[in-house]
Image (cartoon, rainbow, N blue to C red):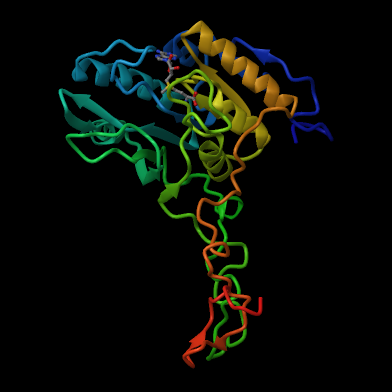
Length: 319
Ligand SMILES: C[S@@+](CC[C@H](N)C(=O)[O-])C[C@H]1O[C@@H](n2cnc3c(N)ncnc32)[C@H](O)[C@@H]1O
């Protein structure tokens, strides 16, 4: 709630292009440093981004690694300034590739965050199935999200991002808790290995942008690291994914994007989200479904043809 009965999204949805604390959605068409300079100190709760990886994509000029890190440091320092004391920064990165040799960007960016005083909470492995097929090394099938907080007193909401337990009906079979469920009925902590499909050609969210992240990846960060009404910033906005995840969960969203084509695309997708017409992969859809895989704990244990007890057999002839 913002004030007396009015909710954040009960007002008209305007997509502003300049930042003001009174706005709800801001897409700044320009350099992220300029946007950051217009944001007051300690005013944003969550910063989540996937910066250019300096690998020569159409939206970046490949720089010497030291120069690239200097530019990143400038952005990260400004992010530290605008972040609330309870806030978080999540930098989603892959590898920089130098003549076939890889340099993991999280490893070289870590000292920048650490020198500013950020505390690392997780190095999340985002695993996906699709990508380039390498012939001289194993194909890369994960990237990382490095999550830092500004202080030890930070927002972390686990319940909204719990995932289904593998055996939700498992109970204590002895002791004082016998008969009670042995796991949290709200679900389990999703851990630091996230298996979420990346946005390639067959993905419902695919646009012309070469490096979108899936909305569901950011929804999990938005829900766990911010509260309703908070600001979420993406300094390298691309197609607007972070703002989409933010407004979907009643946060405010702001981002910068330099390329006019992507600014247009981001605004278009955000408008579709507002109009409830944007198609996305739901964050509740599992890649691995235990029941489909035969692990159905509601099946009554029975003896198979060999006289052995089976609990997870759902291929029985009489079903
Ligand atoms: C890896 S992409 C981010 C894609 C985004 N996560 C999405 O889901 O669409 C990085 C984006 O940052 C933009 N960019 C590069 N330098 C920038 C800068 N200095 N300020 C703002 N945007 C920038 C690029 O044009 C590109 O679209």
